[in-house]
Image (tube, rainbow, N blue to C red):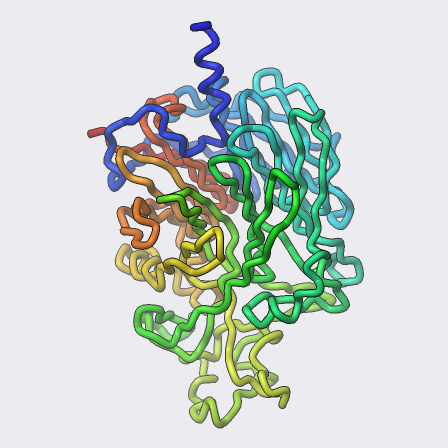
Length: 499
């Protein structure tokens, strides 16, 4: 029996889950870089997953060839690529990876992205194919449940460029122990609630799209007890809740909008004002979260979101327009200084959606809605209520560090995209990847209602994946954060300082 104990502990592992089996005394505010590897150029290092059994890092690489690179991670200070798995037999690009107990699940889109995608499960030691499962269109993210019983995918179901073919967005639940049987859930049961949900901030706006077609699932997180999942609906500005026991979607939480017209939430909306200055402006942000993570505190599940924002911009339909454009007319009563606001050094350069803001139907804008919220937020996983928003703290920290990209001020600012959560020493910590400032922000969220800033780390170009490896499973026996960057193919590893 003693020989089986290590395997029992390994089965508790999911993508370097935040279970803190062995307490290690560490300083969560003192991570430092201990290793780096470059696996290619643009598209070469989007997402990583770690297998503690083989001490290998599996890396999405959609650079010149669609493949999964395998990196020897036994010594993170001297990483090396030791092999790869071709995606050619399975379809198009691989979008996401997740590991559990010696298995690697890969989400792979079809060559025609509007067709069903696949989840392929591989052995992490031999790389042999274990199972191929058909899922919904464009599986954008895959994750194991914490107990390993389920593999879940967020199937975005994006339209084609002409917006003439728009598959339904869906979530696939694959039952591992039931020979990988799959249940595909879409959102058509909520169509009758569309008006009520939109009144609370849900967005349904694709041309000629049904409710189910318009929903675009993005990213999934699973509760510690593996009974509940939550999925971000990024373009739709919402989070959906899923009961994994009954395999049903039980609710949609519209996220509403963020008011930038206060000092604590002020933004820099112009890339042509020759300055970096955060001020209050009469604009709203649409939260539109990408990545999501969760943990339960005092019996309440809290959801942590990176509020990146996203724009539907296709040949057949584009929702974005700059405030300074001639086609954008501001209501003169609400915006008496409209001519000033439309200047490039004011709000003129800021991108907004054309699908919101004309509240009285008179063809001018009574309110202005920009993409993303330039922040991370904490939500109550039971009710969807906003518990905390970082306001403009991410941008304040980046400006102070001298790494804020003013050229993105007119878009989505620092653009929080990735998020991971873990136990570091005595603290529960989140790591927020900032795509446009090439950094990761670390916050103590031991009290999820009052996160505290700890540190800012410089990453590669456009960090996409943020992976936490607990000290329990780390090859160095210290907590690690692995940051993969899609624009330069660089993977950086940071380690917590032991105390």
